[in-house]
Amino acid sequence: MATILIIEDENSLRELISFNLQSEGFRTVEASDANEALMLLEEIDPDLIVLDIMLPGLKGTQLLNILKTAPKTATIPIIIISARDEEDMIVRHLELGAKDYLTKPFSIRVLITKIKQQVSSKEERSNMTIEYQGIVLDEENHKTFIEGKEVVLTHKEFELLKLLLKHPGRVYTRNQLLSNIWGFDSDVYTRTVDAHISSLRKKLGEKSSVIKTVPKIGYKIE
Image (tube, rainbow, N blue to C red):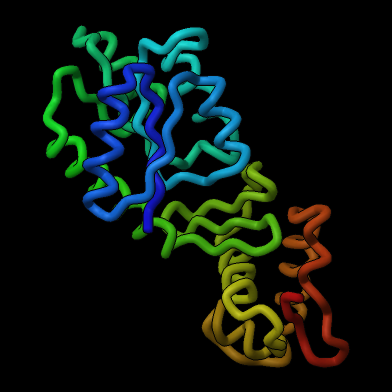
């Protein structure tokens, strides 16, 4: 069940959105201002956020910027709802990272359809992501993150790490790694594997300890 965080200070609208989402099988969490939302986000990990711009205190635009720059919330899809319909305003929020922008008054059915599309898309993207002890591999974009910070790997380093992370605990011989990553199998080239593992460990920093050497055999993730 996907969780939707609704941040809207107008009680009747927030409750209407929540009721309709629950009718569609979603779990909803409500916040009437940005501070309440930030406190909730310390406890929950929503699949999507519906965000009003004109909030009391910290504005929706400021909150959007905070959420898109924080590693924990940067990938959560956000749909803006607002009475502001100026083109510059819409473009600004889309450039800040919002996935969509609906102007009030809007159709609840349209909002729910857009939410379903975003949640479905997020689920598809999550299937292309490998996470292990603070290491995240984004297969779709070929990117690696350590505790939220991007680490640049070569193609072979990325493929090595991906293969090992997909099968934690499994021991791969050097020849198996050569065959899977380089496409050939020969004892003559096993030093190539060792060199790439050494480079990979350096780039992983404190997380390098997840790659274990199995003496006289090969490597595994532990």
